[in-house]
Image: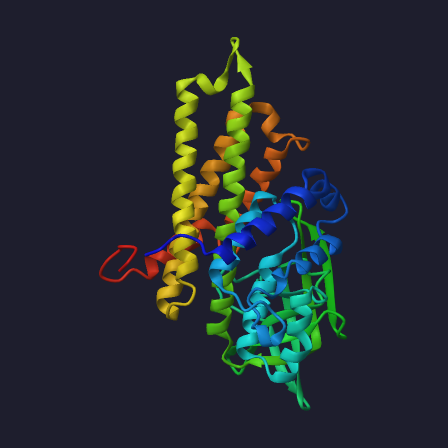
Length: 371
């Protein structure tokens, strides 16, 4: 199997890395965090790179790329701990392109691709505990259309979004709907999250919605798996940069007149961080390559990947803070922001304990990764 990236994929990586380096420095990130955790200006710049249309077919105004390109992009955004939720555009583009009617596609896909519309997945509920088949939100027919009623939690940039993809119960089954934030009956209460980004509690009270698909659970699972793969790739980028910052600090910080990087015990801890990073990278690749596999195989693979990423994120972030000492937890120093980002990513789309349960539940005759 060839794990080398194509020239187009490498050029895409370079373009995103260049934007992160020159256009999304630490001070800009801190300013965005202080302003609420989301920047339309930064979002427009990502759209100018064409990233919003990565999963959208070319004839719908997108780039028509796939999971590997998405992984490449999210790794680079992770290195810059970018706050804007680009993975939500991957999810929205994939779901709408696969199941929406032609009018909905024509109305939304070009705008998602161009950055004029932010569409996010609003699926989490308080009682669900990461389970996708638990949904109390309900939808009902209203004339020729539908209305949606319920509450969704931790919706990424929910009070900034233009529309939501919402799972709701219809006759005992989960269906997916597109609901505009400007629709009557929609109320979003935004707040900052631990890593400096933005989320919201969104209440739908008989809000008008457009049906995407009545067989919504399989597509919701695919949407979450796209999110998991993007989260894994982003985490690899965050960990990669965290390790680099830690090594740089150890090479400059002196104790007893010598750099602490010369202390054997600390070098062993850095080696362990590197090992966890590479384990995470290999499982991120695995998750990405399994995104187009049959549903059962895909779900199993993504749970395995998210579990390993959770273990690696916790280890790398905690070791980085400990190796930095007191400065590692100060808001003025960048490594504390990487720590908070990894802590939040570990819980995004299901925490480590949840995915350990998923891995266990999906084991068959063999526990091997390639079984």
